[in-house]
Every structure is written in C-alpha cells, then in structure tokens.
Amino acid sequence: MLSSIPAFLISTLLFSALSTHAIKFSLRAQRYPQPKCIWNAAHTNALVIVTANVGAGANQRVDIEIVDSSPNKNVYLSKKGIKSESRLAITTHEDGEVGVCFKNTVEGDVSYEVAQKLSRVIDLDVDIGADAVDYNAIANQESLSGLETEMRKLEGIVKEIVEEMDYLKAREEKFSGTNISTNVRVQNFAWFTLFSLIGLGVWQIFHLRAFFKRKYLID
Image (cartoon, rainbow, N blue to C red; front, side, top):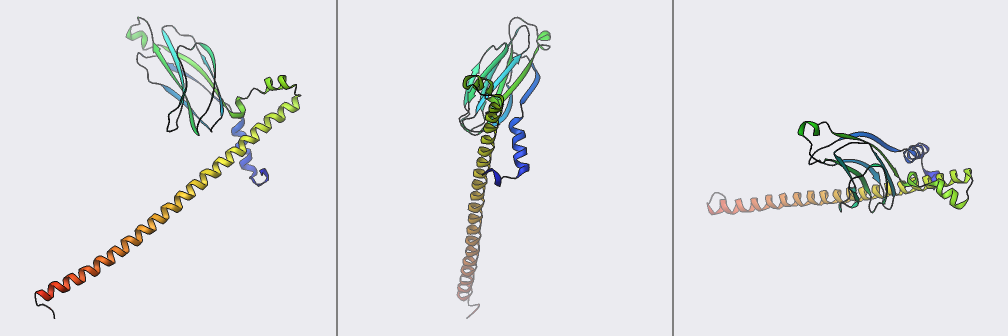
C-alpha cells in the first residue's frame, strides 16, 4: 500500500507526525477575560496530551478548557486554577481542530493600574497521535529493546500516515461527489431555463398573433 504513496508526500507526513506543537506566550490578566485558544488538527479517536506549565503570578487564576471545532462543539475538559505544570489527556470524538483555551482572571482587591500590568507566562506542549504515546513506558512494560521501541514508534507513525491518506482520499471523494452533483444541478437548471425561455417565446408569439387578429391588424 505504501509503495503507491509518493516519496515526497511520505517525507512531508513523516515530518508532520514527528513535529511537536509547542508554544510559549504571556497571558494578560483581566476581570472578565476572553479565552485565548491554541488550535491543532486532530482526527477521530486521536490521543491528545496537553502539558501546560504556568508561571508564577499573584492575584491571578488561570483556567484551562479543551474543546474542538466540530459542529457539536465538544468540551473535553475544563479545569480552574491550574498551577505550575499540568498534564491532561483526552481522546477526540470527531475530525477537526482541538483547541486548548486559557483564561487569566484577576482575583482579590487589586487596583485598575496594577491589574493592567498582571500577566502569567504559559509554556504549552500539545502532543497528538503517535507523539502522545509514552513509548518508554511501553518498553518497560513489555521489556522491549531500544531497536524494538524505535520500530514501535515508526509503526505508530506509519499507521498515522496511512490514516491521513485514507482521510484525504475520503475528502477527495466527498468533494468530487459534491462537484459532480453541483454540475448536474447547474446543467439541469440551464436546460430548464432554456426550455422556459423557448416556451415563453412561443407563448408570446401566439399571444401577439391572437391580439393582432382581434385588432384586425393581420389576417
């Protein structure tokens, strides 16, 4: 199966599978904060490990929520007041993007001027699919050698590549079906418009002919 996949595409997908979704940013504190979300693509039943390291900060409460962009707007996890390092795991329900959302709320009796300067640094790592699997734990549990562990990692990555190819193929078939259906509808509408115009033209001819006959303008 893999022999039919172009080498450059395998390299691209392999690089994507091995990449780590990591970001470090400063989150400003507010009395009524709006969520700041970091989005990553994920397929159905994908394991997602979120590691959030929240820096110190007085009079601030950082909340985290993990959601997705599907029509159902699934909320996988919601936790208030996370501190230092938090490690969270979910399994996605649908294809789409998984969002890790943060809110930094000002707490306590803090003046407006001081509140404007409050913020906390968040170091976020999001591992999806094969990246989220703890192969060291599997190696210890199953007594695997280093080579066997690496082979297990490659097996997981190749499986993700095949699933990605199947997903892209399904989307291509769906879009192709939509294009064909749209073309058929447009063609049918064009024929309907043509026959309607012809029918209207014929009706106008007979109507005008009858009108002129009543007015004795033609025989």
